[in-house]
Amino acid sequence: MVITPKIICDTCDTKHLLKVTLGREDNQYHTFPCTECDEEIEFGLENLFSKGEYRYIRNCSEASFGYSDAIQVHLNPDFGVSHKVVEAGDCITSNLL
Image (cartoon, rainbow, N blue to C red):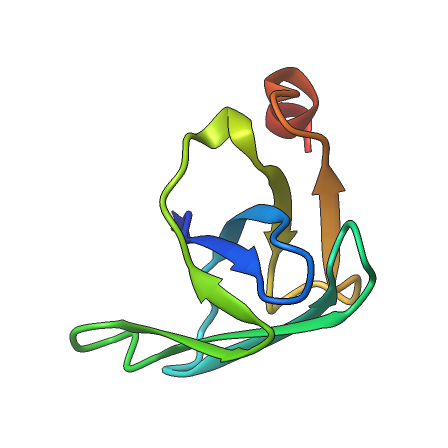
């Protein structure tokens, strides 16, 4: 299952559409560089197997915007590579990943 929270970098206001694959753990945390300013962003999910809550840990805030207005960041707790970045509006590349 993949969820798509929308966040904005608190440093440079870059919009990110996170595509987070849910892992096997009840809590999961991700760290990745902002795609614009390279400041580290931390994002977490807690209580996934009960009600599920987003936790915006550091340098990001929840935001509201269209999917094509943001850079997509793919996060998967089960892969050795921490994230993949897809340019805004590039749906074909995003689907192929």
